[in-house]
Image (cartoon, rainbow, N blue to C red):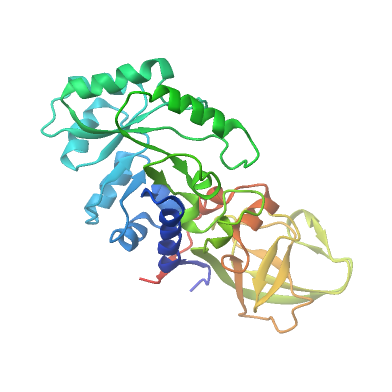
Length: 357
């Protein structure tokens, strides 16, 4: 059996969720959209359900997968609904729903529902992706109340640059939000992972930890609270071939690496078809036989090469950590010009093994 796999530590997942609660003293929706950022949405939800205040997904398809698996906790649709025809299902399965556009508000007003909805009313405070314009916000809130179709409303927005700790943009967005919600008696939700970790002054009755749940920092610089996160995924494989090369020999496609000295090359069963970044350059660290070693040459579809010259104890069958508790996913992402969100979501073909139930 091919040795490439991803080990998912559910105890670390729970630790990171509890950290979000500890830092904010707020209710927390665990964001498990995109198959829990590649970690397996159903297994992650089951691991958190006993203590999570609820979950957040992108769309109704992801929510219905959770309901089919027996998850009864609140589930928020972060993109809301895409067609009015989804509203009866949203009510039937007791899903919470973001409203970010006036057409969605109109659809709710016209819908025939057997029970009222919980709506998270999204304000565009400056990200300019989705969300109501501030001039429409008060009226939209009042229309939801008057519709008789909504039992509860939470006011929300989303930060565009909370991962930049020295940027004034988050304070500017907060000012827009505070002005728009004046006179509205409802709970609010503003803090995503970087805001949970780095913006304690931002008010939020509900927080939405996403990338931090999986133990990766959203910041490109060291940050005290992010240092408390525990990596959840360990991407691992084994050395499947070892060869000795003299100085001056090319390794891999395009001869991007040429051995500068007699070099002991290990081939690892891991490639870009598994989700390891093809653009990871020579020097990107891995952990092999308990020691760090550098990637060399281009990453192939199914294999990559590492320099074992300075790890003489490593050989055929030696375990390799591509990222995890010793080689942080954020460090690999930085080397590859990516973000850990992207690397986790790109994971495919690799079996997921779970521990810490």
